[in-house]
Image (cartoon, rainbow, N blue to C red; front, top):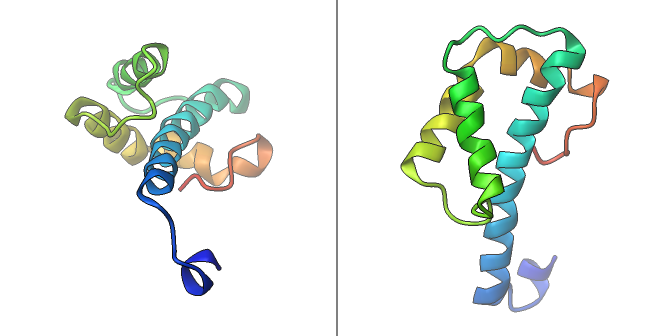
Length: 102
């Protein structure tokens, strides 16, 4: 509504929204990875642990709000392509996954 009926968003507000999107993307993926154990989903890719570690490191170093590095982007891309992650996503009603994740 703000875009249609007001002057839109300020540059600072846009930056804040971008930061939230970066963080939500990483947190959503980590939520799905944690849900695998509870759902009994077995990772199909040998790269799963390495890619998950990359995302955990991003969070631990407080860089989840910044634009993705190439390494982070590739980790997210490979994780999303993994069959186990897709199965967890399809079963998202069985655990709490933020609505904006997809």
